[in-house]
Image 1 (cartoon, one colour):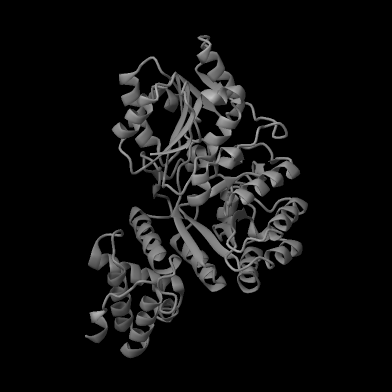
Image 2 (image 1 turned 60 degrees about the vertical axis):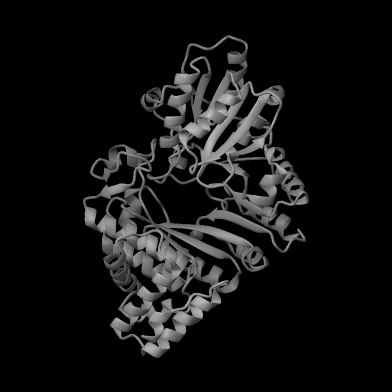
Length: 488
């Protein structure tokens, strides 16, 4: 268990389960900051998905809260559902309040046995509700649709980060809310407009975090590079900081990067910038289907320029299962990203996020798993077999490419077929046939499969392939394992 904010009393407890320890529940910190004078009676408590429901419930019950708020997300809804039922049975007098992206449908909310559900940006709504509940004046209305708060006056949450957070975890920050795009698969499409936090107070908060020792910042802005003047001001601020170990994560639209942004990004030291670059699909028809407007050629040129002229790490996304996309279209997008040399390429499955257009009429002919994370199972243009293949492809590609385990050998793999997608698909099939699993694969086994597959493809002589595999393997710190298959 990780407790980010500790107080002597716990009349109000805000809780969630993060995917891993390094993540921090930024949304709960926002709620805590907005509580005003009630903060002295409040606690923020964070767990991880590795913990058991009973363990989490017992920890929360021990705090004896009167109001217990949960942040519910696609990754934790199953675990928190079990936690909530345990707490409801053990302490029916506790007011249970739910919020978060999973709470957009009143019917789903009712099934979780909550007393109240807040839909939308809940800072002010939760503070008001908690005050009424503690005053024994509970409102009759159980579903609360929160109005977007005024960002000019919303209290900043950054003092809620503990020293432990700053030492060991990614620090989430937010300079804007909303997105100018209306992509059918994305929750941000529900936002009516992009709203900005006042820049000077925001940068002052960043300065305080830096002075406390924060070095890893992840911006939650859905599209960071919208307003050039603000982008340049934020980049300038961080460029002035004398911290060589600083890392910044931004999500950008690659066809909207200006010359001025390029110039600033090129000034950062290698690996200081981690840029999440949304491609999703390279098909013009698919983009129209999902209400996305992107110049694919301009996006690829941006990736190449960023790769060649900056020290940024580029993480590019493709989505499997979008309406109209075929296996060949997805493969073509993959080939383009490999050619552009993005350091990380995520080939992820489409998810049926509640409240999106994909979850409604647009996705009526797409079959999704009914259980979280609601991944696509079949589409009119992709069979269930295709989807399973892509899921294996994605996992193996993470292990071989995205984790940079075989950066010397993989260029030889591309020589084994007429296109990278065909080459890696063949390797993925080869590994699956021999392992029948995608997790808990030792690096030695991955190295052996890659070597034997390349030998079978007659890409180069076994001696050349052995040197490449050995070079990759020994380049990794602490690797003393023997590679007996290289001498067979």
